[in-house]
Amino acid sequence: MAAKIQILSNTNYPLSDVLKSELLESTQVKIAVAFLRCTGIDEIYKSLDYALRENNAQIEIIAGLDFKTTDSNALLALKEIETKQKNFKFYCFGDKRDNHNDLVFHPKMYLFETALSRNTKYTSIIGSSNLTGGGLTSNFEVNSIFREDTPKYYSQLEAIYNEIKYTDSVFTPSKDYIFRYGNIKKKIEKTEDMTGKAMQNELQLLKDEEAKLPGTVPSLKKIIIEFIKEQNQKGIQEVLVDTLYKEMPKRIAVQGLKMKMDTINNTIRGELNKHEFNSKHKDGMSLFKRTGKGLYALTEKAENYAGR
Image (cartoon, rainbow, N blue to C red; front, side, top):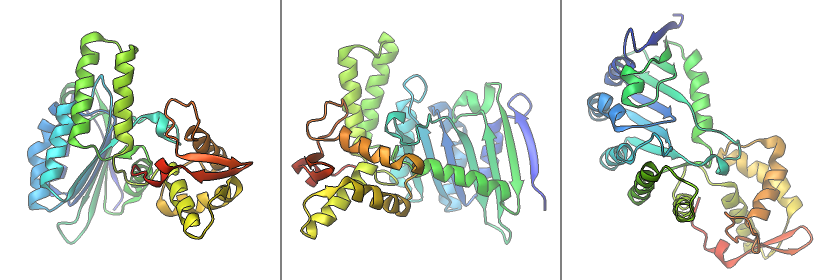
């Protein structure tokens, strides 16, 4: 059967009603949104809970972080669901500065797969609605809905979703991280200033904590560290940068890390320079030491590195 395509705005039929209906029948759900608020979660919570408990649906949500919009209570609400439901996964998308695709995280994607009956059905929703109360009900939004028996559009959108998911900017937030994020958000809302020295220090601490949290794939620096460790076990203490140029694309492909392969050598060099022992880069972590022309070894900090 050909796909049924529907264009909706909240003025003629709120997206919240569509999401609730799809959740009640779904066995697999994937959502990626730039902004998240408790008002949005409240709209779909009962249906989300039903899908998790009654359908045993596998559900995951990727939410963007934005101090002007995404609220910490919404993050905590999803974290609470994740704690109680093993079939629910919740991720955040971090700062674009750490993303080798230079992505600004701004999608609004809702993917539903239903396999409760003999025939599997697929529903994809893309448009302008974030997972907020306004986005799902009262804002003037426009969304396209694709319903299919054969996942032509669904597969294309799922591939885009996976491209988002498997970047090293995606991580699983801890409760401590969410509380810190919430405190910073309150201060920014009160002062409307992110440029002060004290605020910059707090933002840096948040960023440092984020780097230690687990993700869906390791970062490039983590892949480099693990490769050099393997060489150390073979008795090779220093690695040529040319060897990294040759080996890293293979490792990146195996790990599923999404990166611009046409600039991979520059990206590797950038990571080495950024995290070199004496680097003055503001985000440098002193992980690598240059021992000769084109030669690199690990610092003690890299030997004990536990981040992603």
